[in-house]
Image (cartoon, rainbow, N blue to C red; front, side):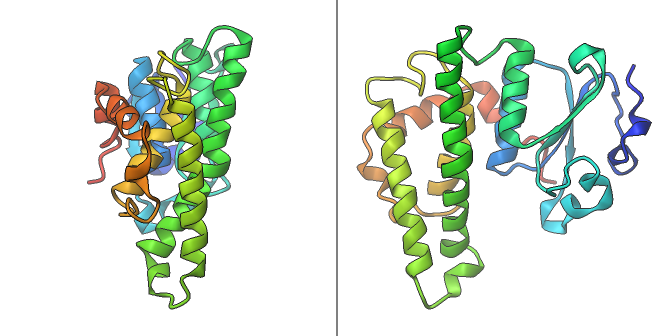
Amino acid sequence: MADFSQFPINARWPAKHPDRLQLYSFATPNGVKVSAMLEETGLPYEAHTVFIGKDESWTPEFLSLNPNGKIPAIIDPNGPGGKPLALFESGAILVYLAEKTGRLIPADAAGRYEALQWVFFQMAGMGPMFGQLGFFHKFAGKDYEDKRPRDRYAKESARLLGVLDQRLAGRDYVMGRDYTIADVAMWPWVRNLVGFYGARELVGYDATKNIAGWLERCLARPASQAALDIPPRE
C-alpha cells in the first residue's frame, strides 16, 4: 500500500483509500475531463474537492502537487514500476490514464497520434480561448466598456468551433465511430461555452451542423453524466 505521507497534499486532503488513485479537482471543464476519463476506465479512485472559489488550489499543500496552482491533479499509488506517480495538467492525465488502461485511445501508432493532435488542439486552443471569452462575456470582463477583447475571443472561439464542426462531418466522434480522449478533452468545454458561459449566440453555435449531435452523444454516456458532479461541489 502506498505511503501518502510523502505527499504534503495528504495533510489537507487525506486519503481514506490509499490503495486507490487520488483525484484533486473541481467540476470545471478541465476537472470534468479527468473525472469522465476515470469513470470510463473503471479505475478505483478517490475524489477530493478543491474549492477553487476559496483559492484552495493556491494553498501550499496543493502547490506541492501542482506548482501552477490549477486543478485537476492526481496521485496514482500504482504508477509506472509500481511506484506512486503525481501528475498535473488535464491533457497529460488523460494520456496517462488512456495508456495505463488501454482505453479510449487507438491501439495503432498512427491513430494514437491523430487522437493526440486533437487533445492538444483543445489544450492549446479551445480551453484558453473559450476561457477568455467566458471572462469577458460572463464574469468581471463583461463590465468593460471596450468590447474589442470580448469580440476577439468570440471570433476565435467561433473559428475553433468551425474546425471541430468540419472534423465531425460524417463522423459520430472526433476519431470516427469510436469515442476517445479527443472527445473527452473537448465536450466539457463546448458544453460550458454554450451553457454556463451563455455564449451560444455570440459564437454562432446554432449555425454549426455537426456539433450539437456530437455533444448529445458524448453527454449521453453514463460516465459523462456522473463526471459532471465529480468531485461534488458541495
